[in-house]
Each structure stands twice: as C-alpha cells, then as structure tokens.
Image (cartoon, rainbow, N blue to C red; front, side, top):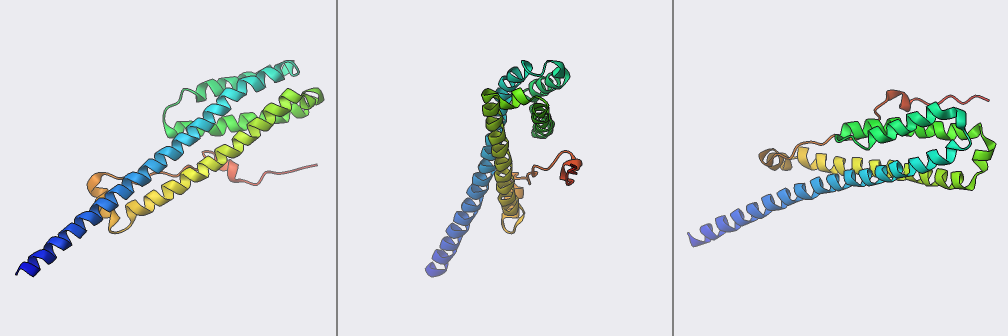
Length: 185
C-alpha cells in the first residue's frame, strides 16, 4: 500500500514538473517573439533617424524634386507615430518604397551620387534595410517555434488553459511586392 502511494506521489510530482516545464516553455517562447518584435522597432527607429539626414543631403542637389522629398518626410513622420504592429509593417513597406525612390532620384543627379555624405548615408540605409529584413526573418522564426509549441499536443492543452494564443507572421502588406520586377534596357 505504501509503495502504491509513493508511486502515485512520484507520478503526481513528475506530472506537475512536466506542466511547469511546458508553461515556462510557452513564457520563454512568447518573450522571444516579443524581443524579436522589439528588435524590429529598434532598427526601424534607426532608419527613421537616418532619413532626415539623407533628405537634407539631397535637398541641395534636387531642388525641383520637392514633392518626392516631402512625401518621404510625411511617411517618416507618420510611421514614427503608429502603435499597432500591422500599422508599423504597412508603414515600413510604404517607407521602403519611398527610400527606393530616393535612390532612383540620385541616378538623375551625378553630383549627388558622387557626394561622399550621400554615399555614406546610402550605405547606412542599405545596411539598415538588410538588418530590417533579417530581423523580420528572426521574428517569423520565433513565431513559428511559438506557434508549433502552442498548437502541438500536449502543449495545446496548457496553452488553451493559460491563454497562450497563436501569433501572426509578418507578411508582405502589398501583394505586388511578390512579383518579379521587369528590367528593361
């Protein structure tokens, strides 16, 4: 009789330990997702801070391109005030398209293109774009791991009991960005 009680007690302790381990795993994965999203915010902030310097450098060369520059400044200011993740990703896509316009604009101004300050800012911005893309991939990887844990058995039982819900992946906001660009000479 004592042996059966000890076995039941050991089994109960193992079960409680397993449940604690699952719960802590969910908390850890959720925190990794939040940390990855925070990393994206940090890089987007760096880009927001770099854009005014780039605009000021361009202004001296491209005086009649005021509309393009004004649009970029408007997007930058609008993007720095959004709160929701969906809005941030939409503004990021809009700002990325605007940054592409800056580089295209530089092609029309050889003096601007040769300016070392512009080249430095362009390099910094391109590096930030690469960092943003890497951060988004990292985020999606942490979301994948989290979602697998939340949706797999026996974790799904604990996840539902404690309110751990599936997270959304970051995806392209504009479906046209998936299309292969046409290159013509």
